[in-house]
Amino acid sequence: MYEVVIGLEVHAQLKTKSKLFCSCSTSFGQNANSNVCSICLGLPGVLPVLNEQALEYALKAAVATHCEVASKNVFERKNYFYPDLPKAYQISQYQEPLAEDGHIIISEDKKIRIKRIHMEEDAGKLIHSHDGHNGAASFIDFNRAAIPLIEIVTEPDIHSPQEAIAYLKELKAILEYLDVCDCNMEKGNFRCDANISLRSEGVTTLGTKVEIKNLNSFKYIEKALLYEIDRQKDMLEAGTKIMQETRLWNEDKEITSSMRSKEEAHDYRYLPDPDLKTLYISEELLKKVSYDFPELPAQKKKKFIEVYGLTEYDTEVLTSEKAIADYFEEAVSLFSSPKIIANWIQTEVLRVVKEKSISLQSFPLRPPELVSLLMMIETNKINASTAKKVFTEAIATGKKPDVIVKEQGLEQISDNSAIETVIDSILAKNQNQVKEYLEGKEKVFGFLVGTIMKEGKGKFNPKVVNDILAKKLKER
Ligand code: ADP
Ligand code: ZN
Ligand code: MG
Image (tube, rainbow, N blue to C red; front, side):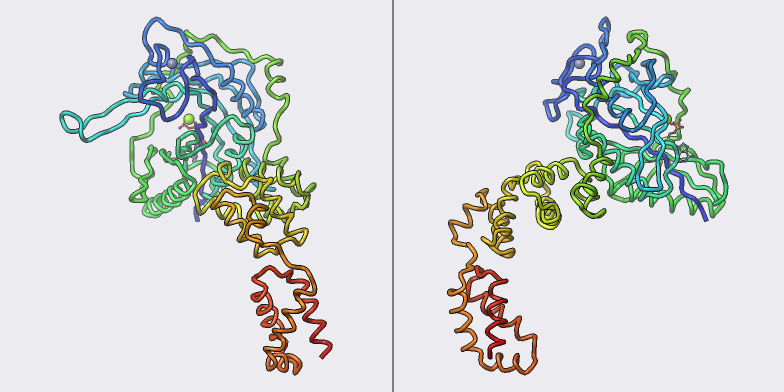
């Protein structure tokens, strides 16, 4: 048997308006090379200046993950040539990173240690095209160059793909709750490199690891890790030595393939950047950053269980994303029936969000409208099945639920005499069934209720129907 050992490196883009060392915009989807200047293009004779907002965001992430923040920070040049890196070095941190020795708790008995968090700049983007003047051509877009990132590196504490996903989801939620990263994996502002090795059970030294790059969805991370576990297991069983290397996930073939043999830190000739002063983090700055700290996922979970009385499962779902937690809490503040709201969010709201692949933020029915719908059920104005129809209609038309109910005359009828009249006529028309029921065939009761409800076009209050019908049958 082999034990799986995984360590993750996440690059998270900080949601600052400007880049890490210049005032260029970070806005996404602009024309290629429109967000660039002499600093982020690495032209000679210019000097970088650290973006204070980026530093504050990075510090928030460090504090939230229980890291020790270093008072002394050094920016270093990581030297290598690649066309997307105009200076031929990336400004990063190596010897003196921002923060070390933190952790994230992913379940009651599992804590993943964080080795370090450092700040660095992103590279540009290469665009390969096959219809250039001479056939194939490649282009470079530097809009992304020097956008601020933090890299969050775990200790090799993760022992299964499931644990890896749980850690990533928790980290993502923390960064979202802090509002320091958009964590949009498709746009690449939350990316993960996974390091993985196997070792025979009982062995305490680490096996040779392989690093998998290019993982931009939870699904791919899980698939790539599972693939790599199988591949390494086969190799070890065949007595083949695992090579330390960097592999790429190929999403079409669903395999990893070798990209390059692993480079070592010394290959990069890290050197302190002489253009950037040593950065000392003051107590005041740390205080400022820690002040007014938002509620984090762990605290939210506790509150949802203790204050709103939700189950563990409901809590997991409702706190998994900040947008869901916010939606829920806004609704609860307007209508204090947490359980009903939790159910509707999970079975209706999130179902539609998923079907339409939209974000909850752009879901048309906002908490006040959802609440107005739920209150109509609560006050017996409409029944639950009408409410579901109104819900669908409100999403499709953008009309408010109470307007739809009024326009279509969907109000539930609780008026006893109207219901009684219908019941009498149904009983008269179904003499045989009534006889069967009186002879002990209890199932018939449901059939009669259904027939009456149908006659009432779904608008009868089902409880009133049940009560009157039961009374009338008893009297026979
Ligand atoms: P490198 O210098 O190759 O980048 P690091 O020591 O910085 O290696 O570790 C990078 C990541 O790889 C960390 O998340 C670490 O936990 C993980 N890691 C290190 N060694 C192993 C191993 N043998 N198996 C799995 N993960 C590992
Ligand atoms: Zn710039
Ligand atoms: Mg490393």
